[in-house]
Length: 241
Image (cartoon, rainbow, N blue to C red; front, top):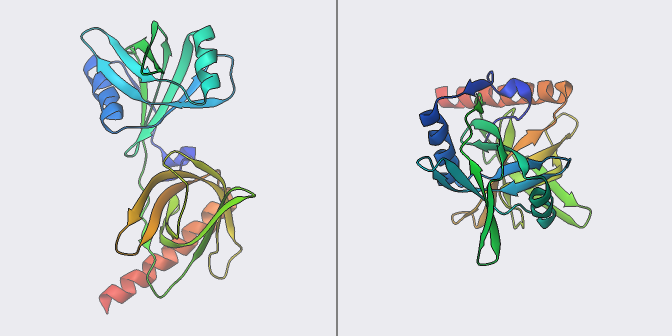
């Protein structure tokens, strides 16, 4: 489970100009199948893509067709984009100009120069507490009024949650506008949630997801930190016994 996406969850941003390090980070995005958030000049919407190839010898990388399709259509017009990606606790961002648009099997791809500058931040990790079987903490996820999922927490940190759901149509990269966690003896915690992973747990015969909270207020963050610390103390007490 990833940490919180608020600014205090990251270290200072680093400006990287070393070509070898830039290529290494780009290849990490490719090999890790990182989901890219892409902004197109003149558009407020964000589109998704992925790194298909990195060729430092020829000085370019290939990006997959933007989704939804409107992003592709706008990029063909503007030829200018800004990329942001998160993977394994790091965040990178860089701009790019489309040199060439190609396609294979009906899917477009974009050739852009390997950036000479890349911005990098390392996410600080949050201690997460696994929820014991004796404590059931309900979680409610609502993507639309007609699409909601109810389950129970597997683990919790001040950055996000792990949860078990009977079934779900969620996938990695989805943003759920409403996540409600019913913390004992406290008002329900409400936040948006970015889904970081989805997998089927064979042992429990349930779907396990992990996500990170988006846009927690200072009051919510404080209440959550207090509850996580309480769970941690109880966990340590049990271990000492």
